[in-house]
Image (cartoon, rainbow, N blue to C red; front, side, top):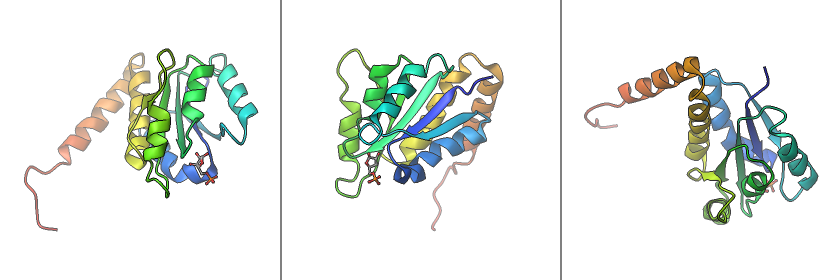
Length: 161
Ligand code: RP5
C-alpha cells in the first residue's frame, strides 16, 4: 500500500522541528515519507511533488517552512491533497514571519495552519492522523488511546518543581 502522508520542508534546518510530526506518526503507526522540497531553491521539485501527489496516493501533506514560507501555500495551489502548514520558528522574527506567510492564503486555496514551531509540528502529525482515522478504524482506536493517555498524564493539582 502506498504511503499516505508526505512531510515536506524547505530546508534540512527545518527537520529538527518537522521531526516532531514524524515522531507522532511513528507513535501512531502511520507511515510517511519525509522530503526536502524548497519553494525557492528547488521549485521544480515542488512542482513535480504537487503534480504527482494524488496519483501517488498521498492523502495529506504536512509542509513546514520558515521565513518567507511559501512552500505550504504553493503546494496547496498545486494539489487538492489537504495541506497542513507548519510555521518554523526563525531567529530573526521568531516565526511570526513564517506564520503570516502560511496563514494568509487567498480564498480558494486553503492551508490548515498550525502553531509556530515544535508544538505546531506535533499537532500537524496529530491532525494528519485524525484525517486518516476518519476511514481507518484501527488508527482511530490508536489515536483515541493516545489522547486518553495524554489526558491521564495531566495531574489534577500543581506541584512545586
Ligand atoms: C526556508 O528558509 C526554510 O524553510 C528554512 O526554514 C529557512 C532557512 O533555511 P536555511 O537557510 O537554514 O537552509 O526556506
